[in-house]
Structures are given as C-alpha cells and as structure tokens.
Image 1 (cartoon, helix red, strand yellow):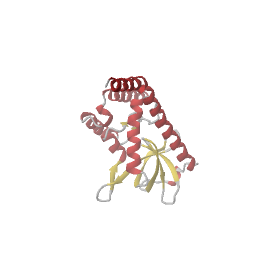
Image 2 (cartoon, helix red, strand yellow):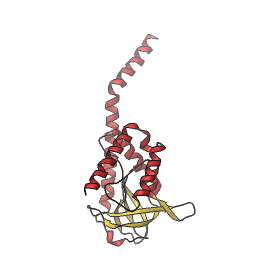
Image 3 (cartoon, one colour):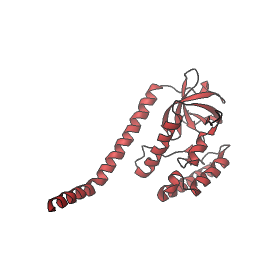
Image 4 (cartoon, one colour):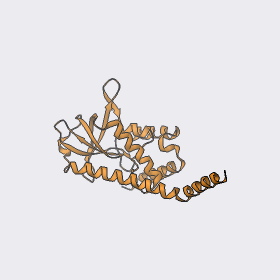
Amino acid sequence: MDARRHVRSSIRCFWGRHNLTIMVLCLLSASLYYTIGVQRMLERFHSSNPDAFATGDIVTVVGVIDGDELLIENQEGVPTRLRILGIKSFSPTLSDPLLSEYGKICFDYLQARVTHQPVRLEISEKVLDTEGRLLGTLFLKNPQGEYTIDLARDLVDKGYTLVYTRFRFGKMADYLTVQQGARANYNGFWSNDIVSARSLALLKLWEEEGAGG
C-alpha cells in the first residue's frame, strides 16, 4: 500500500514539475504545424491574381491561411489570396498561448466551414490591401441554397474574431452591433476575462489609429 502511494506521489510530483514544459512543447508543436501547413499551401500558389475576380463571382475556398485570410479560386481555377474585409483574428501561431488557442479555434472553424465550399464574393471598393491581397466579403449558402450568410459577420457573432475598426468600411456599424451582442452573451473569447480585456484594448487602439489617420 505504501509503495502504491509512493508511486502515485512520484507521478504527481513529476507532472507538477514538468506540466508547464509539456504544455509549452505542445503549443510550439501546434504553432509549427500551422506554420508549415500554411507555407506548403502558399508554395502551391506562386502568384496572386486579384484582377481575375469581380463582385458577384462564385468562387471556391481552397485553403485557410489565417482566421481572416483565405485562398480562393475562380471557376477557371485561377487563385488569389483574399483578406476578409472588416475583421481581425488572433493568429494560431502567436507566442501567447491564450490568444493562439482562440486563433486556432477560428482557424479550425474556417477549415471545417468553408474549405472546398462555393461562396459568393463581394469585393471592397478599396480592392487591395497594402500587401496586394484582394479585399472582400464572402457569403455562404443558407439552408435554402442562397448566398446570404456573411462569413465575417458569422465569425464576429460567434466570438471568434474582432471587428477591425482601424479602417472604415460600409458594414462596420452592423458588425459592431453584432460584436456587442457576442460580448453580452459571452460568445467565444468574450467568455474569457483576460482575452476580453485584451480585445477591448485592441479595439480602442484601432479606433485611435483610425481617428488619427
């Protein structure tokens, strides 16, 4: 009996000493997995072709780069990188384990929800961002088969991403209303006090930058 207690005590002590190390190694492995996966995906698409796309096109999502960036193809198989307009997501490769965990949740949701799915594209008036990526909104099919579900709005509603208020866009007021609802209902990362506080700080910073610009 004493021997069993000794073994259990030894296991608990080992786990207590190495718990943090094991958790860090797991996070580093997950970060490396996402980084390598994204790099391999981008290597398949050597060039971005935003001029081959127009508002109203039905395109296919062929890959998820991040919680707010996708690879899409038009019906001729021409690819481009799309930056989803009006949102900003946490990266699954962030060194902060708390934020990266919510970045992973958003990434995984996009993988399951839109990869290899047809979506309707609506291109922003600005067309391209500073990195040359196509700026736009994607609409998914509703149960009736109509393209009415705004993907960015859906991510905000679930508490998977933030409204990117640094730059003004047409649907900002609507997205912010949805975000207030997500926060009030403790959806997604709004249920975590630490992430919620950091998110509010980011929103304040973006608003100040937007006002200054």
